[in-house]
Length: 243
Image (cartoon, rainbow, N blue to C red):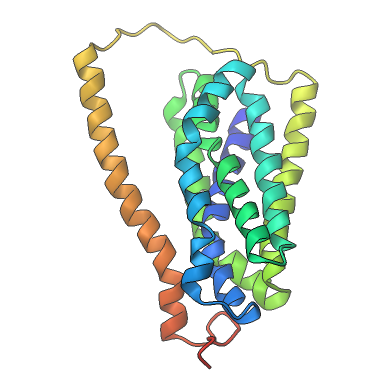
């Protein structure tokens, strides 16, 4: 049960932290008086690292254990989000956003297999529950960032989620320190191993499907906040830079 909880919270946080910048950037345009495209470029390397660093993150998880890597995920991504909230220059914000991307890369190759291994015969149920939290993170990212910007500032929109993420990492570290997770694989009944041709076919189908699904998903996620801001000035509680 603890693995399901921490894995699901991780799924929520990663999608929250991958999406909130596209709302925060609208406030930064006004506060820093910088054009949208220059601010958007600051997230480019961070977004790239989510995929590029996934392979080494997964390999490291196999070596030192999934629970230890998940502690690094929560603490690292949370700390980088807090750092972004205190950024006072483009370079500092660039480093913080890149750090978010590096630590976010841990989740999918480590957190999902961690959940699957611990779920035993109830893998579908565990993955379905986990998927709800991932979708919830995407759904509340804009609302959370917008509310914190309106109530406090754009800095709070980075710092508050970062504190929640770090707090979760501290709790997970407490569990790990007391031996609650041993990262052992829960063995279930043996199944027939697929042939090499079947593995290649499944890999190809998933590769193509995930590429185009991610392209549509991330393009929409990136563009929508700016589209709403252009069509509804002041919708998020601040005026467009052109005003």
